[in-house]
Image (tube, each protein chain N blue to C red):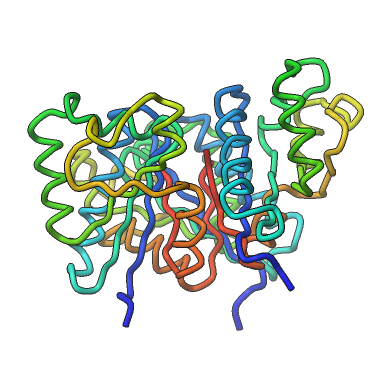
Amino acid sequence: MSARYRAVIHVDEDSREKLMAALRNAYNLLDSVGEKNAEVAFVFNVRGPLTILRGSLDDYTREQINELLSMGVKFFVCSISLRALGVKKEDLIDGVEVVDSGIKRIVELEREGYAYIKP
Amino acid sequence: MSARYRAVIHVDEDSREKLMAALRNAYNLLDSVGEKNAEVAFVFNVRGPLTILRGSLDDYTREQINELLSMGVKFFVCSISLRALGVKKEDLIDGVEVVDSGIKRIVELEREGYAYIKP
Amino acid sequence: MSARYRAVIHVDEDSREKLMAALRNAYNLLDSVGEKNAEVAFVFNVRGPLTILRGSLDDYTREQINELLSMGVKFFVCSISLRALGVKKEDLIDGVEVVDSGIKRIVELEREGYAYIKP
């Protein structure tokens, strides 16, 4: 059975502020409804993958992401965008999942009842 | 019975331009389909609540908001964001409703068939 | 029968970068799932119509748009926004369709199962 609260959060800009807002949204949802009642997925495409480069994240943000990963949040990254940006999976932080098309994944998640959120 | 046209409009930036676009979207929807056929809700979170501080709004914008309120439009504000911003409910314009979590409210509204709009 | 992958892409800023991201999203979706399995619509409102003025587009972007049009992608433009911007249909590129209200069209498309995407 699927969780009552499902959200897909779309990150397509190279903006630390947007990333922070995205992470906060995920955290607040999980916190307010309880981990068991929520399924949250991020989709990074266009320039969004640049916000989660292994070398660019401060400790605080990395910790936040690790906490979200440990709560079962998914971090999907678009392979088409990675190619266009010249970024390899190894350049990204641990725990992310590369998908063939970010936009396709968003459409699939919305179809499965995930509420779309764009910070 | 629920109205045929339902929209949730998300405001998470401290930007007068985004607020104006959001209000215009709401007004245009109500105007084009008729008040009785539409249910519109705003959700303000992250830095969005800063756009509706009591002291910061010009007369024109305040009038627009009052008109939307009188047409039944809901203005939901996230309590978590208010705390983070150091803003109290009394600092906000009249007519808004503080909810425990803005993101939770958005997910609930989308689940109820509200179309998500992000200006 | 409706296509399995349906997306409505919202463009409301006068930003070439956002337009490019929007076009790329559409193209990537069509490319990854196949033309027959996707229905994609753009809705331009608020300041979005300024990105598709006849005189302002470079050859590359115009070609991209023509290719999307030839694949059946719809380009809807809000008549209320056109009036507010002082722009006429003749000022826009060929192939677009003017609708009475952009926001109304977005709500209708989401209700029909189109996944909302905001670049």
